[in-house]
Amino acid sequence: MSGGSATPLEQSATPQVDALQAHLLDHTLRVLLRDGYRRFSMNAVAASAKASKETLYRHFGDKAGLLHAALVRSAGMIEPLLHVGLDEASSPIDRLRRLGMNYLHGCYLPESLALQRIAVADGADGLGPLFADEITERAVAVVEDDFEALGSARPRQDAELFLGMIQGKLHERIMLGVEIDDLEVQLARNVEHALEVLAPYLDSMPSDPHR
Image (cartoon, rainbow, N blue to C red; front, side, top):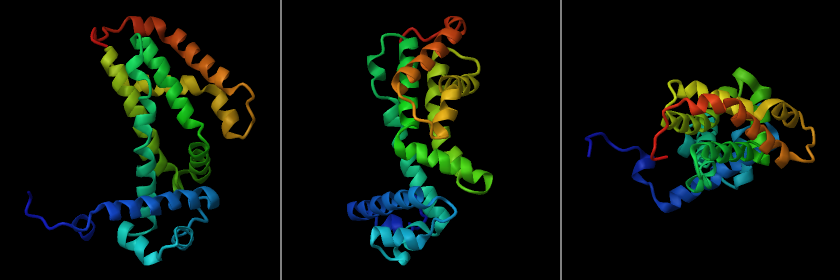
């Protein structure tokens, strides 16, 4: 072990502390979704969680630390969601298909959609950069790994292109609150179209034979 002293939180890390932090962060997201970034306050979280503001400061430091921890917690739930069913994929293309659908399903969960709207509305001076760093980057990294395994020379760019293609104009309509009657059909159509467009490029990659 290193000779550095542990922080009070590290020294007291217990299942009870973990449960308390999870409780506080759940209420942080609840308040954020209810009030938006600009009206968000430590007092509101404390009231919602039935905890003292001093408890929030002790565990998370300040408002910025609390929001960052809440988004990190949300981001930690992304990767398992993205990987649902990938082990059952019959081919690299089928794996990308499943990955694309998992990503879109995650984007349009009510909580996720609300966070995206808040991040876009607040822009660079609000939740936008934090959302991009903790949520968007986590998703791109997972897709990037798949393109790298396929043999892409530019896996990062390929991942961003693929995710942009499968969202398309449909994403804008959903973000604006337009009700989509056949959402699942349109999501699948977007993914299939992206794979068709990318097919010649994907076929040219020296994909890993073990995938």
